[in-house]
Image (cartoon, rainbow, N blue to C red):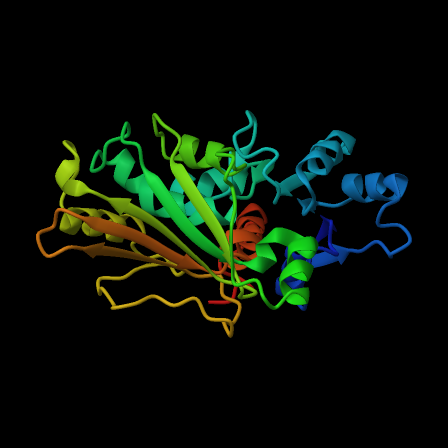
Length: 307
């Protein structure tokens, strides 16, 4: 017998890609509201309380309101917004970091943000192992395809071909900062510099490390060995040993739910650059949600993923 899934916000970019990954899978049956009922609160409330699994692809305030509408105790929720990522009672949906059992047994799962997926994958194991200091003022530089900004940003980039690069988050209050700090157990929030490029999808997240100036930092070789051990056997996260001359974000990128990690080091080992490359709509959003859904439903976590 299949489990019913209701995607609240199914018409958005993340919701559409989740539905694509679930299409044709006998384990799940999608509960779909027609266009005339998608914004009807009574119809939504009925769907929210009748599904086995609810996936919220909504703005933060709307996600909180949707959770408040759920009155049935056995409904399990995956929230793709940032509303609950550091909230009590919610499990952070990064199985490789928090544990597959924790996600599988949770009722409320908050899906990680796209940028934090790369940052946390790189930093959390290294901080936890004591190979990097938790009290260092880290910086994080990142670029993403414009699909991560939703319909308005997609329209802006596609309607104005003159935009090549958009730097933002200049108020130092990006909504992803709390989860980046909490999940990595950092004493200070990272100095985060996000930007959008003129490609639909794809993301590169980088953390520069002045190892020679850090009192409690391990060598690049030790950092690499730790990440390899942390993700040993993963079919989703690949830790690369090579140091290519360049990493490219391509306009022609195909959807993928994988995550690639690299450590680049200077010849004297006094500087390093930790780099994550992923699809912001894949492991950074829809793919991550489907991975969590698989675990919560007792299925192989990679079922239906694009790997």
